[in-house]
Length: 229
Length: 239
Image (cartoon, rainbow over all chains, first blue to last red; front, side, top):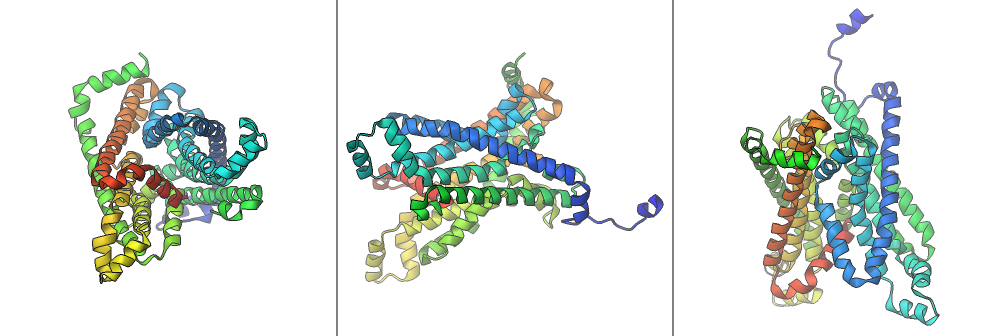
């Protein structure tokens, strides 16, 4: 049997192969799981950091410039460079990838939350103050809910770009589906592996985007148009 | 020795700069790849964006293109393009980067022309300007700040992502980082950090220079209100 296999003419290098997917389903599912986990963790942590920062910038206007500038500088630094800064300290693990992803997602979320908060009409503001809401009450019960469309937009942008960015984690050996893409390239440019990784990455991004869009729609029944952006 | 000291030592070794494949070589490659990619992106995106903005059609398509390219990982294009008829080497890298330069250029060109006041357009029409004249003499000059903003965003993004070309041996400064990882963190830590520093500094320098350029080509009356509002428009276009 092996004799015949060895002499079969050109095994070919197809763009896609079910055979490959079936034979390597374990690897693919593991990569997909790592990819999804990293993305969700990064966006969650980034949100927990970004929303307070955006509120801070909203309350204390002079802080807006520095906060946006700092996150802008972080955003300008190339992903590869950022991972290179972190790796010597945190080693070759998922932590390195996670920290990099969080720093990137930060700017997108802060900026959109801030835009959302800025769009709260002044009359609403005044009305809330007139009804006796304090700073915190107004923030939690009026301003943040009204800013939800902006927040959801930020989360969607951050999620989609984070999914694409996880692949750069290949550099430290934890790139999720990027592992398949680069693995296939190094494995004598095995096209089926590369394409499987790439397609799954895009599908994951679109799926998460859809989930967030639906969540935003459910959370803001009074603001259908804004949420559908 | 901690990584920072290692990085300082690495950066202070002149051979690391002048050797074949040293910093200067890689910097040259990086800048060349980026410049060609941005030029290519402009060549494709600006005419299309200006045309769509002039006719006022295809806004949905512009947003769609931005969204879809955001979801495609750079690494995927970088690895897939060499397998097509393009072959290995710098050519597929340049084209992959150009693809990612298109959305900001396109979106800003489109927005820039759409932001021209309808009254201005009406006045120009009333003065007897034809379609192409309107575009060349009225809309284009008014859209220059937007075009410059798009150029800056695209160029910075291309310079940043060009570092990833090292994954497919495409050259550029990223190669220094990859080589460092090849040595392992213990011995290559300094080189990794030094490479990261170089890549980051280059991106920030390009950002700074182009910000200055953007300011220079923006007419004085448009400057004060310009920057932030425009960037917000671009971000909204991306969303």
